[in-house]
Length: 251
Ligand SMILES: C[S@@+](CC[C@H](N)C(=O)[O-])C[C@H]1O[C@@H](n2cnc3c(N)ncnc32)[C@H](O)[C@@H]1O
Image (cartoon, rainbow, N blue to C red):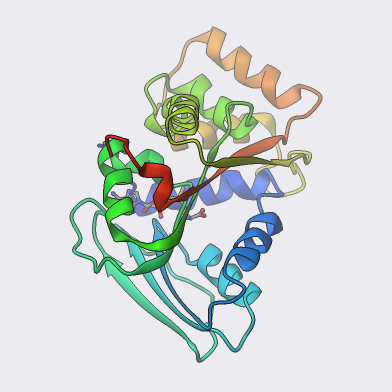
């Protein structure tokens, strides 16, 4: 299984900063609608990273809601976020597959981390077991058309983060029949930063994909993607699952 290192995190952060526009308000709005009547919420955030999603989600809820967030990650980078008093955060360091958690979550949020959990069936099955009967699972994953994904695929055919995506989205959405929506972010690659050349972008992406050398063809394909008319197009598929989605399924 691919293990993310602090170096990978740092590099991915740089690449994301070049491709602006990854923030999504629509997910928070959807989750706010779903949990409007809850006075308190137990949330599991799988692969929380720097806690930016957990923070923006908790801020988007009404501030009188009592919120408890269990954040599971194999590695927590420094986080600049200070949560308000009635948001309780528990950081649990470990692989989601192996950590012991109580089955009491209203919301299980798995944003851009499903790729790294190994066996997708096993991960979904564990999520199902941890969800309250009236709870919701929200999975955010690169859509096939995401240029950031395509850039990574140019550099590493076997990168699980990119190659799994289309297959997982299609399989889960046809098998589990839950609601699927797509978020598209279209923005120019921001060459105003210090990583301001195509070559710098290429070397960053190589680092992220953990591949130093690549054939000329793939490098050319990468350059073509960077230059094409919508270079900053990012696309996420957002998958919402209820417990009933799993009925009679082998998860
Ligand atoms: C691409 S980042 C996404 C971070 C954050 N959720 C976001 O959307 O910005 C993937 C995260 O999954 C974490 N991760 C990778 N493998 C994991 C595992 N087996 N169990 C828990 N977290 C894991 C990584 O450390 C990383 O923080």
